[in-house]
Amino acid sequence: MSLQGEGAWAGWPCFFIRLSGCNLRCTYCDTQYAYNKGEKWDIAGLINEWRQAGVGLVQVTGGEPLLQSETHKLLEALLNEGARVLLETNGSLDLSNVPGEVIKIVDRKTPGSAMEEFFLEENLGWLKQGDQLKFVITARDDYEWARKEVVRLRLSCYTEVLFSPAWGGLVPVQLAEWIIADRLSVRFQIQLHKILWGEKRGI
Image (cartoon, rainbow, N blue to C red):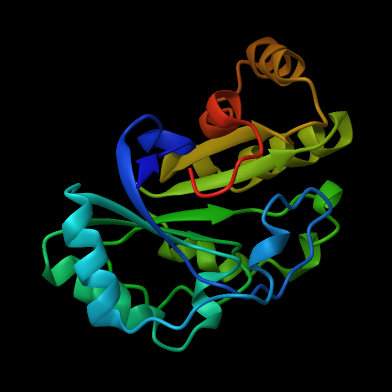
């Protein structure tokens, strides 16, 4: 249990379920420890752990959580228990079977991630108001590319668009100033958990 560190739910107490395994290797990845290792849990055990945490908000993340065959069942089980459920995904896998009540937080990989080509653009059709599309910006070139995508696809018309500086790379105030100068209809965000706890895991 911790505070949600990113996006529209930043600052809220949240129970995290981190699933292992990832099909991408982003240049700025801060969760390489989740690539392979993990403990086996059944859905009932995870539900019980969430209940004991005593908070209504839960995020299923990774790695890439949709790589696991039982993730959709886990999401449905959490919803059935009355949880408000967030799913953070890298956008490379089909979102069509994700329950509609789940709040989707989708990473749109930029050229600076070196994983841009793996994004499924058809996933944009499954985003709605309340969902979030996140661009992690590594440099000015990334910003320009992301800005053009926002305009080209009119992303801000149907979902919340987040621009986040790559931690330890782009200086946050620089990204903020670019957004302000362009009057871009996106939400600046920074990783709250990194400000509070640095690189400490499990917080």
